[in-house]
Amino acid sequence: MKKNTAWSKAYLIFMFVVLYAPIFYLMFYSFNSGGTMNDFESFTLDWYKELFQDTRLLIIVLNTIIIALLSAAISTVIGVLGAIAIVSMKKRIVQNTLLSFNNVLIVSPDVIIGASFLILFTMLGIKLGFMSVLLSHIAFSIPIVVIMVLPKLQGMSTSLIDAARDLGASQWDVFSKVILPYISPGVFAGFFLALTYSLDDFAVTFFVTGNGFSTLSVEIYSLARRGISLNINALSTLLFLLTVILVLGYYFITQRNNRSTGWGARK
Image 1 (cartoon, rainbow, N blue to C red):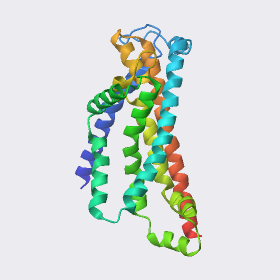
Image 2 (image 1 turned 90 degrees about the vertical axis):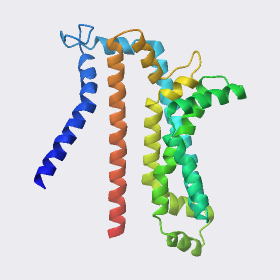
Image 3 (image 1 turned 180 degrees about the horizontal axis):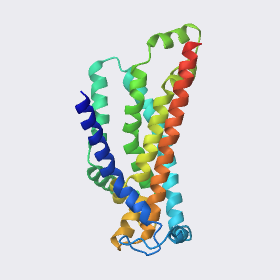
Image 4 (image 1 turned 30 degrees about the vertical axis):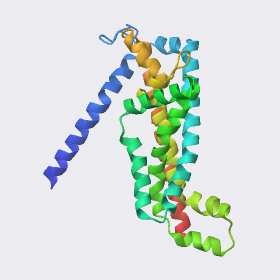
């Protein structure tokens, strides 16, 4: 048993090294004054200063954040309503069918999804740009929210809803004061996942981005094709730190909700 545990720990450490070593290597050389990723000469913040002096890049960062926040918020609302609709279906076969359609969008290759959106927007005459990217991000984020919210709804006892209705609660009161507080951890999880997916999505965004509009993932790809530049390292470092902050934020919110739920149960 101890031998298996040792092998498990070694494998886990190996996987973390494989996953994080390239990221930390990239971050380390974002402070290199030499301008290359071969020899570290001295510590500098020049690449970050140059990054923040690039007005075009700052606009792209703003575009990316706006797209991520809007798509996450809208997809969370639609995803919660969709999850409630799936659970409310009385026939099991209908639930499974709707859930299968939802899961297909999650496992489908991003290239196919991006190409499909490109064809759809072209047929509808929608100009590629802010709106096409926003609609695409909302579409691929909704299934993620549904998957995160659905287990909470399925684990919720119907007696809570019945008791609220017996006490005279309206349909809105049942939703806002019973269902929503109960599924809030799943809602927060869906929102943060949708936000993260939107921030780092490349494949779908690459297909539906038009001239004059870009996001960070597409911009980094464009910069990387021109050759090695430590601006990319600095930008990627900031993106990674932003993702870490989002994950930590979600973790602390989840822990706070768990403590509140546990305190309410003990009380």
